[in-house]
Image (cartoon, rainbow, N blue to C red; front, side, top):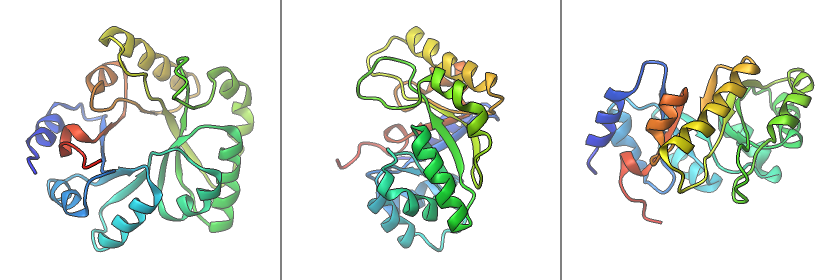
Amino acid sequence: MDNSNYLQIKKKLPLNVNLLAVSKGFSSEEIKIINNQGQKDFGESRFQEAIEKQLLLKNFTNIKWHFIGRVQSNKIRKIVQNFKYIHSVDSYEKLLKISNVSFEEKKNPLIMLQVKLSDDPNKGGFDPKVLIEKWDHIKQFKSIKIKGLMTINPKGLSSAENIKLFKKCRNLADSLKLHDCSMGMSGDWEEAVEAGSTWLRLGSIIFGNRSY
């Protein structure tokens, strides 16, 4: 595995931008290589695969695990039990359940609320208007800490179109007084940084091609 891309990207990033290494589809050995270069934050989107890696890497106590996949209601308890960060909470109902489960489990996960800023049918998330309407209620939820917003842009956009959508997310986060925006992946991370991202979710560009 060639980790030169990882090191080059890290050098380019402003101090306020965090790199989340998306390790879905990559082995625990590959995670170790990047971890040895100083990478602590790793993102997984398939629960069972993530748990297997967490067991294999349980002695690597500096690793912070982020759940970035679609949150299924029947997996919420297990996600809360095993992840400190959740980047993909896409509805009020799921957020309420996470809050209730976190209280029961005596956990306090850090949450990014996924917002839908385009008409892409393949993407989920809060409608921004609904999020604003419910914000006062959401702020009262117990046992969670909402850190920011997350969004995924449709594929095939121009650089200018990517920046425009990312800035919508940044402006919405600012209006809600949220510090973080989890936005930008391997194909559009530079536009995300320009628009104000604080968390980049990078996988293939730093690990190489996935096995699936």
